[in-house]
Amino acid sequence: MKDLKRRHFLQQAGAAPAASAAAALPAMAMQAAAPMGTKPAIKITDIKTFLIGAGSRNWLYVKIYTDQGIHGIGEAYSCGPDEATVKVIEDFKLWLIGQDPRNVQYLFDLMYNTTRFPGGLIVNAAISGIEHALWDITGKAAGLPVWALLGGKVRNKVRVYQSIGGNSPQAAADSAKALVEKYGYTAVKMAPHQNGDGAMAYNMVTRIAGQRVKAVREMVGPDVDIAVDIHARLFEVQRALRIAREIEEYYPFWLEEPIRCENVDAMKKLADHVNIPLASGEANYTKYEFRDLINAQALDIVQPDICLCGGILELKKIAAMAEAQYMMVAPHNPMSPLATVINVHFAASTSNFLILEYHAPDAAPYKDIVNEPLMVKQGYVDVPTKPGWGVELNEEAFRTMPAKAWRRAPSFRADGSVAFI
Ligand SMILES: [Mg+2]
Image (cartoon, rainbow, N blue to C red; front, side, top):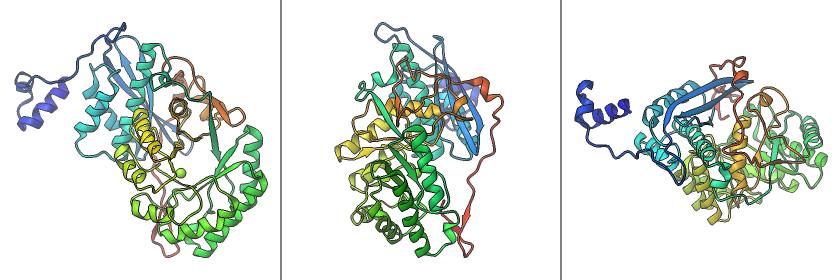
């Protein structure tokens, strides 16, 4: 708190000497930790981060400690550079020490509003990871799973899908078959493009998209849903429209990130001309960005990431806005099994939840991260019932998982210009 007060003073009074800052501080209107109902006051005493290497990228965890012996865990999105997100979490820590972690909205406001400028991916990833940990503590303190604090359960189990691999149409079809047979998935997701698409002619990219989706549809049959993810690699609405028309006859579940996310008008124009549900949102954060997409009716399915959009309560708010426009929510979830658990609490308590992105945790590094990862059973995962998230981080495993200096790799077009990834 001392550092926060000093920062606060310096903002108001200019570069005054630190020694006189505390004495000159106006009374701050910070909420004091206080008993809630029959439960005692709780104060945050420390916040730690764990940045670990997980295959091709990193996973970033937040752990918040309290004076009542209760701790909470959360996951921040791996944005690259992940060291920046660690730094922001360490900075927010100075604002949060001494606060009652159960005042989740207040502490979100403290972080978001006091940042002043709307945060980008780093700040919102940091806020999200912290927010998760606050909810975990709140649930544990109340003796309830987090979903019970967010409206209770609206479903008994949560539908999940996994992305397939395979570069050729046949390899993609084989990958889909293997996943559906092994895990009982009722839906999968695929890329319509092959490697090197940035350097291919328009017609070739479009033709390959049709061949790939056709091969997967013929392999899995009519009743497994196939989501198709362009991953915002296209720039022009007309190119996305051509691909949509090429694959429409195979009845995709949705067409994801058909174009980039900056231009809502362009997304709306596309939505008005395709006969496939449009999904997007993994690169957007907070209710404010989703407001434009949702109110423009530019999408059918919104896909916020719970580790990036501002946390589980912010995702609930985005879902409520989408619900009022008859849209569904299919959260983006490429992070670790902890993020999956947190998403399942959202899904369990949200009426317009559709399906969750998922990776079966039956091999390293997925199987090593939490003590009880949620394992898919015939396309669904169970809803945790223990207090808080219901799982704990396996910090022992982190010792052998050093973080990487991870950055996204660029992609180039045939003329040497930089493509979208
Ligand atoms: Mg995606």
